[in-house]
Length: 494
Image (cartoon, rainbow, N blue to C red; front, side, top):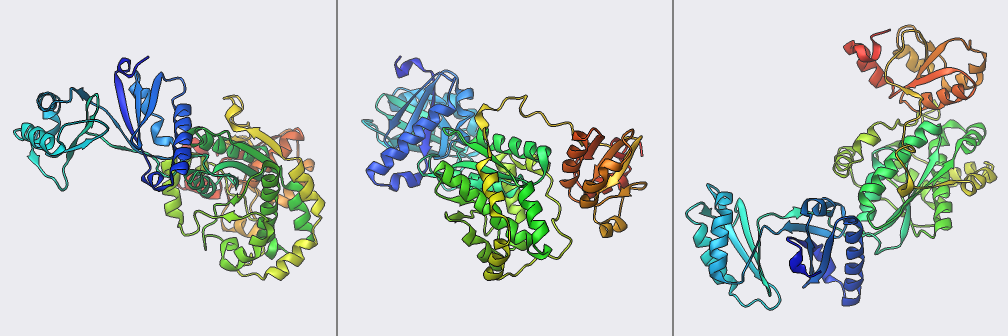
């Protein structure tokens, strides 16, 4: 089938930095980009070819074809061609005046013309005569026009367009080796993974599960969304490492003030273990300097040596507002917003300044076989193979307080005294984990905690033991706002 059989055409411009590479590197990058574009266009009839540093897309289904271009790394911009004209000035003048008079009417405009391949016309003469043809309808502004009428002169004709849609830029996904991203489910790690993907790095994900099946499900949905929307041409995996025994050992052996720093080292070691297993060359984290206690320079200095592979921190200089804005842009914000932040491991004040020697001595007291076993037994999830059924939310979370429920507040006692739902009984997580078996089994239970992560984990344990237990979605802040507003959908029955 020849190109003339495809009525719709799109000009695709690779990221400019690709043109600065040596010819062998540029050719390799371009080939990867074309493969990724074909993956994005899977199911859409099309033809694709190279034309002097840019790519030309031919199709019969332009709307379907362009919908994926904004998510292919290495695409700087693209322009749907609005008119294909014979390569004569007379034909251009007539067509542009007929097709674009309404577009420039009452607005400022400029005409820009470029010559490609064997085109013969003078670009300056085309700009002058086509611009004059539009002059009765708008006003010329060569510096900052509201409308740019662009004309590409090619050997077989002239292509006219007025729109440039941005792509994600960067370089094609797959031109670098692979990395593994430590995925917590919050806003930071998906954005960090996106930035490394934008630099050509294929990502797999490691989730160190401290929060049970509900937390795992939320992180799986997030990793699936990131893979589906942005890992075009790649097939990422999620490795789930059960950290419950590892954390229990740490809590038993070490003082609470070092838990956050030591836990991060253990997660680095888990990530490195998966990296060795998959052949990945680096570990990616969402750490941003000074954001939390474990992300001070002193603590990062204590944490870094735990990984035997390089640690990449794309967000190190970002603030939280910038990260959340980027999460909205890439489409992970709403899912991350629903993932609870795991409640504080200890009531002790965490270290904001640590000495590497002390942290290494503390970690040496742990049972290393627990971590080794957890990494060896990590479950591998093929994100592309997940079905809608796989992504159905477990029946643990509740968005309202049932009228007949016994409400259990899982906050620390001091927080419970600061605020709690009227009528709630206080069982901190450690206490409830030890005592829930003694609770009456003929009641319905609704749990909530400070940040919304411990309660689902405890509700899961109670369900497995035969209790009718669920956890309130979100933490105390969400519940308190609902109470103060008198929101009937959340607390109307209380």
